[in-house]
Image 1 (tube, helix red, strand yellow):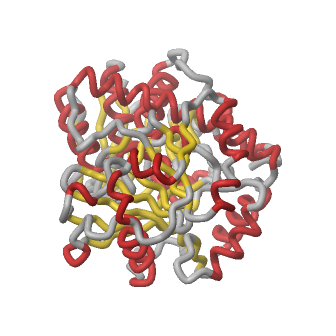
Image 2 (image 1 turned 30 degrees about the vertical axis):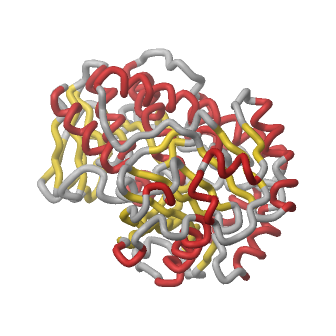
Length: 421
């Protein structure tokens, strides 16, 4: 079968790789000159199934007010006359209940753990390199209240059988020696030893090379203008290079997916939530992080990627804006200098932002649509890197008519037919 994958980020490239492995003739289309140059380019670097949780949960509305008032708060909202923004925020609030949180998390954890296993299998199969490390994630608490608030998180980890370690200050420093020089008080941490890290952009580009060896073609520098529907099927994709045709089509355009689907009468509640990062050359390896440290106070992730430190965070609701706001960088700088002073050359850091394709309930949207040959693989939010391999493998199985290794029914677009959307 000829398959056209729309989008050359980590989701599109993993989809293409697994589709080619399944025997399909695959072409990837993307407006960028290379794979992985947009949201996949400089994310926080975590592969963290243990943190696969919805943003919407009990207590989040109250926390959001606090975050909005903080100088270095993790949440920023720029109000716009955009119905999609307010519709998405309203749906997010509707999911902030204990019952819906439990349902949504139960849909996310199996996919995240499956994806980690697929990534490990892929690494063993093709020896792909991407500055990977398998040394866990440490959620760091600066206050006793933060540490005391881990009870509910620990209960969920126990429920799903996710290994964890609850550490005191000395235990945190044992896991991350660079924290010995931290400026603020550290009262403890929650460590997930099975989590991994790696450079998503490096992975995406390396996997694209392996995909090409399997016959995948890349139509890069090609702008996707719209999908052409005839009856119950998609007959082509209008692009800057003309109309491209295939037997099946995969929508993997992240935050831009809703814009392409809307003219077809398909509505998915995916909205861009901007995240920021800095990439800092390591100044002193002993003073830098070993793996990933999550600064609970600022909701910032600090990750070791080879000879660099990636610091990522902030949830900015501002539509499709790509403006780099200096105040967002100040938060990232603050977290790094607080916890790993002397670890990196901040003066040589590069500053970046990307648009995370968020659903209001948390899980991505994977599977068929009302058009027989149009399939979705989008809406992964902050977990695109964590869920990429599993999502690509799952999509390939569904499109190929094979029974997936995990249940995909509750990831389908049909879940938004009920009030929980």
